[in-house]
Amino acid sequence: MRPTLWALLCSLCCAWPSLCAPPTCYSRSLGLSSEIMVLLDKIHTYHRTKPCAAALPTIFIDVHNACVTTKLRDFLYALLNHPDQYCRERPRMVLLKRKIQNLHTIISRLCYRDLVFFSDDCEAIDTGHVKPHYSEDRLQLLQEKKK
Image (cartoon, rainbow, N blue to C red; front, side, top):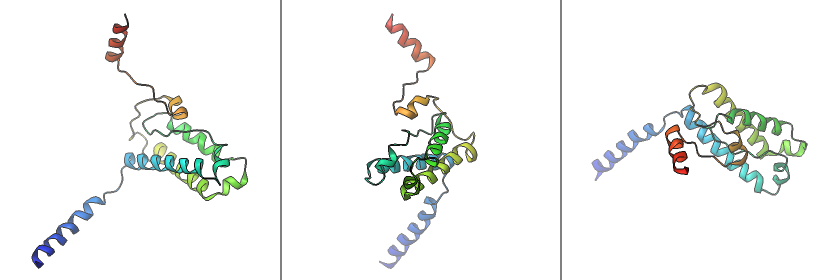
């Protein structure tokens, strides 16, 4: 029994360090963008921060959209210049500001040219509705079907 238990313990100890790889720019930006979206949802639903969220613009963060850096910069400007001082000091709003600053820094400086942008639809970040992107071959087939 002891050798089996010892073998299991050794295999688990060897497997644990393999899960500790440092995050890449892409994985960190994806994780941070989802954290921001969850935090924004909490801010919009929590009774103490709901009035603060009314002054913020809507944003749907997609790190694959080329417009994300400018929209993050604009959103950060709105956070920093919130008209209500009470809202600027709320812990969730401060955390949101810090996370958006980190994501903007990661995308625009640290991971510059490492991320691949699949679209440049700035309206999709404002509305959350992504228009389908067709390649030239698919677009030509769609146009031929209409005729």
